[in-house]
Length: 93
Image 1 (cartoon, helix red, strand yellow):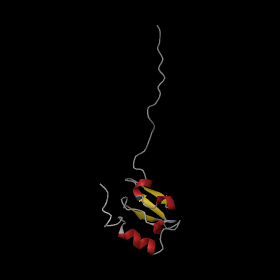
Image 2 (tube, one colour):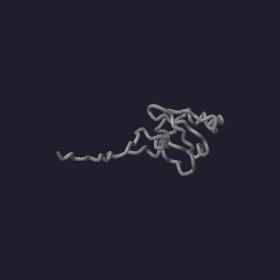
Image 3 (cartoon, one colour):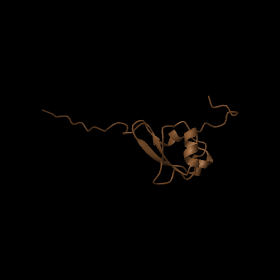
Image 4 (cartoon, one colour):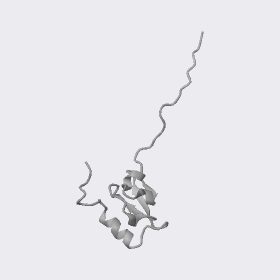
């Protein structure tokens, strides 16, 4: 179920403060654990370090990301491939 439209989008208050203070440049990325926070237009052109569960992944926000959640751009699972093809040989004796 989605969030009520009368409440508006959820954006973490600490992130809004940090973006308003001028943080989020390349060398000064904003570190956050708020993966559920939506991306407003104010975040475009900023760098965020989004927590992935074990490490932080750097995310640069573009116009196409507005309306999505920060957590969508830092995957929590590592894909290691489907199955390995094992070549089996039969020994005839």
